[in-house]
Amino acid sequence: MEDLKIDQYGDELYSALRERRMVEPLTEREPKITIADAYEVSLRLLARRQADGEVVIGKKIGVTSKAVQNMLGVHRPDFGYLTDRMVYSNGDDVAVSEEMIQPRAEGEIAFILKQDLAGPGVTNAEVMAATAGVMACFEIVDSRIRNWEIKIQDTIADNASCGVFVLGDALVDPDDVDLTTCGMVLEKNGEIVATGAGAAALGSPVNAVAWLANTLGEYGIGLRAGEVILSGSLAPLIPVVAGDSMHMRIGGIGSAAVRFV
Amino acid sequence: MNLDQETIAKLAEHVENAELNRQEIVKITDDYPDMDYEDAYAIQYAIRARKEARGTRIAGLKMGLTSRAKMKQMGVEQPVFGFITDYGAYAEGAEIETSRFIHPRIEAEVAVVTKATLRGPGCHIGSALAAIDFVIPAVEIIDSRYKDFRFDLRSVIADNTSAAGYVTGGRMARPESLDLPVLGVVLEKNGEIVELGAGAAVLGHPAASVAMLANMLAERGEEIPAGTFIMTGGITAAVAVEAGDNICVRYQDLGTLGFRFV
Image 1 (tube, rainbow over the protein chains, first blue to last red):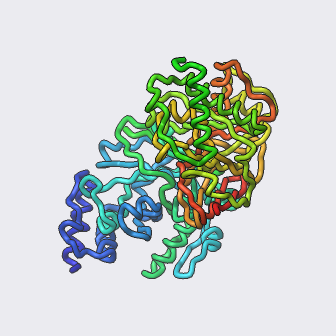
Image 2: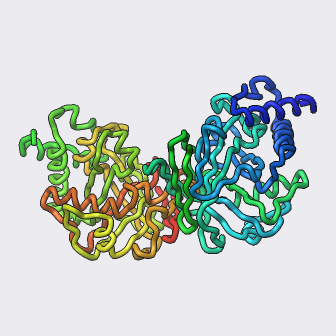
Image 3: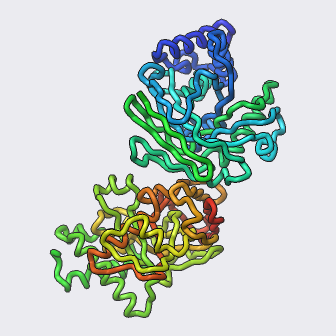
């Protein structure tokens, strides 16, 4: 896709984000859009946010579960960028009615890095060695694309449908927990709505981080010490509206809570 | 109760024969629409008595319909219970003859063994946890005797809640050393992850399932004796299996349970 269109769609998604409105799927308007094009659009969107003063503090991995991969007809994950404007603390209120369009909550494991990770060739062992700790985390995804009618290119262009994220109550040494079998319970308004386990993210959340390091490595981009990496949802996405409150807990890691107002 | 003793005995024989002959049947409420829950449990207990008269040992109890989603789907407020038999037992690493079943499915669970009597009403998570000696990983093999797993709640209770077999193993742990609601389970079939979940999928806490079993039995004037083996209910959805399938279930803090169907 030519640069002009890349910029045009990036700008459109940026406006949609800021004005809280939905746009038509890019894949309907540009049937030939490639995954590489979509990442270019996402970089334009990111550049616009950075121009507003937002600072990149990490990355997120999406499309990590079999269910979502099958839904989108792809068999690899995708990624987006996390900025300082997206992060919330445990127990915070998130003003969905002012900040978001069609939010859905995901429970996942966040990695906080203490060393840079530069692919290709990054192994699971290196990811573990580079991890300062893991945390329970809510990612509140949101789509600027009409009614979540996304194909893989749409979500990639839209920063992997990232919205905001809420980090939990504890940072745990990754050596102290089995990241594959750790169980997760997700509650909405006091009712258990889903359970899951670490293996839901590409067989192990560690695999997801290694995938990201190796994928970005192909473009000469590294993961940096201090960055937060969201490793992918461990249970189905839960739609939320103002008035909902959610709580989640992961075995051996900790819990996170968020209220939507 | 709406059915007479003779009908109960006849239906018990009919449903049990379906199990023994591996012959699927249509759900019994089709012919006996007036059958109520009491009748359904009476049929289940009659099947149990038939087995015991033949020398079968009752190896423990099981809970079914313990997921809120399943209860909502069936329109009920309470789970159901059944019994498990000595001949349904398989150990870790077992080769399980698929031809012993009609259309088997498996569910990953945690099982407990009690060390004190649990008597309802009024049992709660605390009393259940205090009465649990240890927790072990378990997989239940369910095999409805009804065609295509098509049944209603009364029919499935009469059919001993589809109980057909169970595999235990891995490693045991004291309940106080486990965080049961967030204990994760990953079920793999032939090397592929097919289902996963955490303990809270069972009524919020597997010990709540044990407490509820005690309270349901109390309505019948029964209790759970010390030393009882109890399957607390499926953490994962049921997965269909066939000959040739290799199953591996990984549990947080409880090791791995592997077996295969031949």
